[in-house]
Image 1 (spheres, helix red, strand yellow):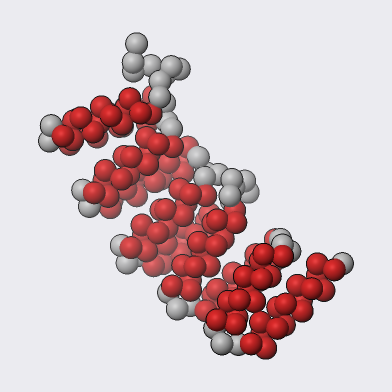
Image 2 (cartoon, one colour):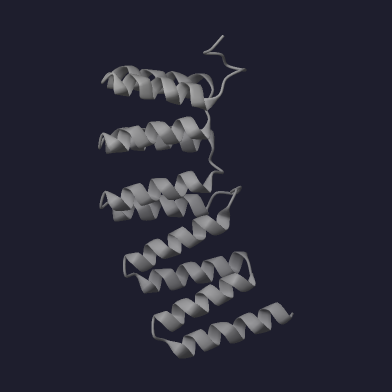
Length: 178
């Protein structure tokens, strides 16, 4: 009955792959997870396969898997974010930045606020306050949500520019009042 394209679930594939890992047969586990992705791609299968490759410190395979994952689900903000964070951990800052740029330029996203917040937090963690300001401005062009104005003002206050924070609050007040 299993493996089957229509009636299947991720847990059975993941458990089978973990069984092979416990038997110390990594090649079989990879084959099983690859077959699962080919037959019935699901978020959990991709995540578990990527987690296995990260555990084995195989970054190139993780990149390939994330590429397949994003081909299958380009709307998944969590996948974009995790991919960029993996690149940042691997000291590939420019690659992470490029991934975030690709992600925010996608037309349909399931949780764009999570993606934008992660991108802004990434730039702040890289001590790139100027780029974070630019990102906040770009986000405000897309949406004039009150939380964006508050976050931007708090960022400016944390950066030590109280006048800029006050200006953001004023701009937000005027924009939201209209």
